[in-house]
Image 1 (cartoon, helix red, strand yellow):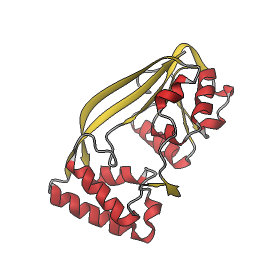
Image 2 (cartoon, rainbow, N blue to C red; image 1 turned 135 degrees about the vertical axis):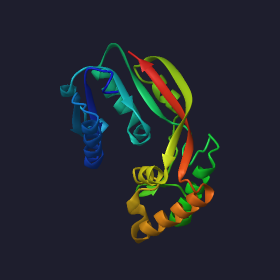
Image 3 (cartoon, rainbow, N blue to C red; image 1 turned 45 degrees about the horizontal axis):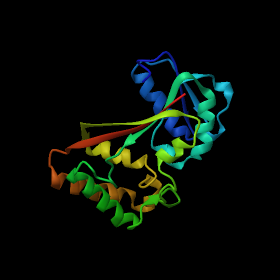
Image 4 (cartoon, rainbow, N blue to C red; image 1 turned 180 degrees about the horizontal axis):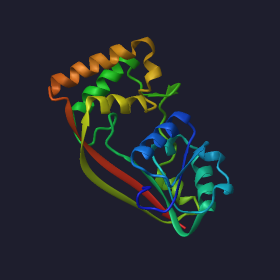
Length: 209
């Protein structure tokens, strides 16, 4: 987004994620991003006013009502908020990508049948995002969906897994390298080229002020 807007404030509670963002921005010669180490729940009016706030999958883990209340206060009149994510994941393979089933089954072999979520197990949100939006101050709620194809290498896939709550590298402990080896072998057996097409299904929830 930085290439098409005047200024961005990027917020994350993990320093490593901000460091990676800074690296990617530097490689693209982008200098209009301010990086803020913080939880979304802890942001204040000091960071300014914004036309649009985007939140990805992390919204699931947030105190959703509290975050939307804060974001509403930071949003300029006529602006809004977008909650966006990939609806076809390793866990919920809506795009019917065979390699995703291989990845998820391998993860379960190493970490157990229950979906992990950091130090605990995954629990579905009590309320769907539509309900959360409905009780917020945002109005004109609507959804957006799109599907596109993207090529992934094995390194891309393994790198992505390390950034998730359900397969963070630390969850594998001493078995991490074994997991990477087994997964690589299985993916190469599925396609020796090591290149896989992902059917990405973008799902966005949009609210206006």
